[in-house]
Every structure is written in structure tokens, then in C-alpha cells.
Amino acid sequence: MSTATRTPAALVLEDGRVFRGSAYGALGSKFGEAVFCTGMTGYQETLTDPSYHRQIVVQTAPQIGNTGWNDEDDESSRIWVSGYVVRDPARTPSNWRSVRTLDSELERQGIVGISEVDTRMLTRHLRERGAMRAGVFSGDALGEDGAMLAEVLASPAMEGADLAGEVSTAKPYVVKAEGETLFRVAALDLGIKSNTPRMMSKRGIEVHVLPLPSTIEDLLAVAPDGVFLSNGPGDPATADHATELTKAVLGREIPLFGICFGNQILGRALGLSTYKMRYGHRGMNIPVIDVDTRRVAITAQNHGFALEGTPGQRFESPFGAARISHYCPNDDTVEGVRCADVPAFSVQYHPEAAAGPHDAAPLFDEFTSLMEKAK
Image (cartoon, rainbow, N blue to C red):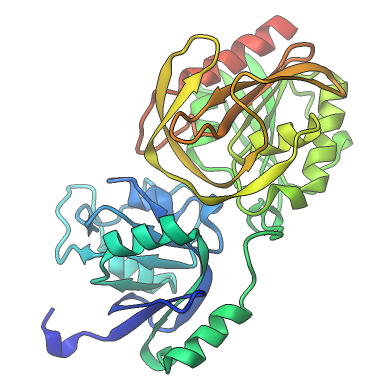
């Protein structure tokens, strides 16, 4: 693309910092929380992950779009990010599965992006100052710095945002088991990714994906052998309905497995509180240590909130003894909770990870074993 044809764009942060570049994707303005993602691949899965709803994603990998866009790797029905920030977009994708370019897909879905940004400098700024509200502006929406900043400051913050209901399915649906059906699972959709039911399906699990407003009666109508709490966006402190539903499941001692947002919901049901992290964990290269085995897993994560607690901490809950089972050695963030007296556990990361890593995939086998024991 020649310099003469580039359309100016700007990323404006709520602290007044402005990063300038060229438009990438659709023109206009979009607002959200600016966060950085350290994954070097899997941008299509990132963009279509409902957990990124109302976030402006900064890719730390310098080159984005090299493999184009295909019709098989979407993690949901649409792109959920509010905006997209990259350094060097690929001019021409090169992959046998590619059917169109990344920027054309961003434009088709109305996602406002910006390229040619010094993403290393931007990432360092977000690490030092924390994730914050931001806006991406291009085309007719590009204006004076003060006016753009005023729009950013008028946009909603992530803390206190109740977003899971905005990404949850409107109607229940079923993902059949591959081969013989061994178990039936009720999965509460807080922002579930497509690969999650697939991972369970391969283990002989029939997955009934239920909308967030579902009641305990709706859940029990499935006659589930287990309950799954999915990933999702927003502040877990606002997810009162999901927390109360989880308490009802624990009270009936139905095997339960939660991931990401689901980990925070289980923690809240057990009496733990949550807090907003400075800049969160987002990427597919984040280490997690299992307190029992001391084994380290490299994991995919996307969360800006976490449970209060310390590695290995044991505590009493309304449902008996429980403990912090996993943690991140980078910052001691709680990465998992396990109950001793009821069949329930959760992790903060994504065992269904696509495009990877797959270190945590055996957690689905552990869930299967938990259901087998309950039977």
C-alpha cells in the first residue's frame, strides 16, 4: 500500500496518550478496554472469542494476518473484539486454508482497527499504567485529540460491566457425542468457545449448551451427569445469577467443572471474592503450576479479573473444604480451585485452547473421571 493511499487512524487511551497509525479494517470509531495479547498465532480464534467482548486487543506479535482468514477456525458466530491494534499487517496472506484476508474480514464485520502502531511501546505503557479505556478512530470519526479523549472518557469501564448475558446463546442447543454417548453435560454459556463442546464430544459427552438465564430446573431437565461453566467476558462480581445457579448445583453434588470466567463463578459460590488485575493474562504462553504435583503447564488465557487467594490456600466454604489448586508463577495469581467434599473443580485457563497449547487438555479427562465416579 502506498503512503498516498493510507487512511490516518488513532488509538486514544483514557490517560490522554495517543498512538497514530493507519486504518486497518472498517473505518469509524469503536470503544473498549485496551488490552494486549501475547499469542504469536491464533489471531482468528482470539478475535472470535466471546471473552474479548468490549475489548480493544493489541497484538504483541509484530506481524499479523500472514495466514489470512478461513471458515473453520472461528470460536463463535462473529468477531467480538471492539477494536484491533497491530504493527505490521500482512499484505498478502499465504496459507492453503485461507479464503480471504484478515483486513477484509475485519471490514466485513465492522471492526475498526489500526496498523503501523509501535505495539512494543504500547504494551509497555499498558503494563506500567494498566489496562484502560480506549478508542480507535479513523475516517470521518478522526478528530481533535481533546474531542476523541472526551468520547473515550464517556465510554463504560470494564470494572462493574455485566457482559456475559450479551454473548450467551439465546436458545439451548446440543452438540452430540462422537460415537457412543457416555455422559450428558449441561454447559452454562457465559461466552463459550466452539472448541469446548468439541473437546467434550470427542470424549463421548453429549453437551447441552444452555443460555445464561437458565434456572436450576432448566438445568436438571437435561438430566446431566455433570455441569460445565464456560469462559466469558466482564466483571465476575456482577454475575450473581450464575453464582446462585452454581450454588444450587453444588448443593445437589452434581460433578462440576469450570474454566476462566467459570473458575471465578465457582470461587464466588465458595465464598471467595474477585478483583480487577492490573493488565490481566492474555495469550497462549502463560505458565501455571499445579500445587499438588508441581507440574507446570503452558496455557492459553484471557482474563482481566481473578480470585482472591494464595497458592495452596485451604479454606472452608458453604459446601465443605476447598483449596487453591493452581497458580501462575509470574505473579501468584489464583489459577484453579478444587473442592474436597463435593465433586467440583475449576481452572482459570483454557484447556480447549485453539490454536494451542494443549498441555491442559487432560482436564476434560479429569471431568470425565469425576462423572464416572459419581455414576
